[in-house]
Structure formats: structure tokens, C-alpha cells
Image (cartoon, rainbow, N blue to C red; front, side, top):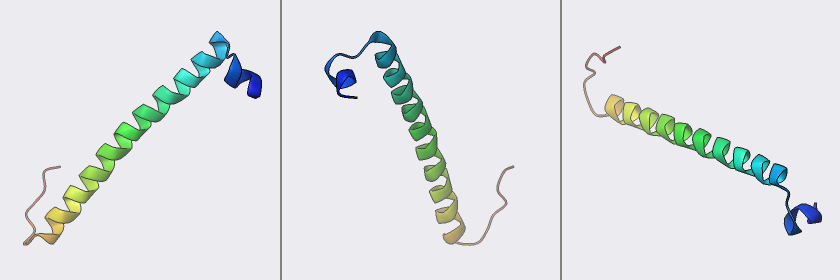
Length: 54
């Protein structure tokens, strides 16, 4: 493990880049989903219910 921190190979750097990219994409979509849920909850609590588009 220490060898990887001191002198990483191109394969190890590629794996790290793939993990970082995957986490970034997942975080982006997770944040969007949370914002959508919050907006729906606020809308539902704000007053009389109007039909939501499907």
C-alpha cells in the first residue's frame, strides 16, 4: 500500500481516476434526486394540492 502512495503505476492511477469519476457521477445524480424530493415535499406542504404532471 505504501508503494502505491510513493510511486503509483499508470494502472493504479487509472483505477483511481475511474473510482473518482464514478463517485463524481453518482454524487451528481444523488444531489439532483435529493433536490427533487425536497422540492416535492415543499410543494406538498405549501397548500392545496394541485395535480402534478406525470
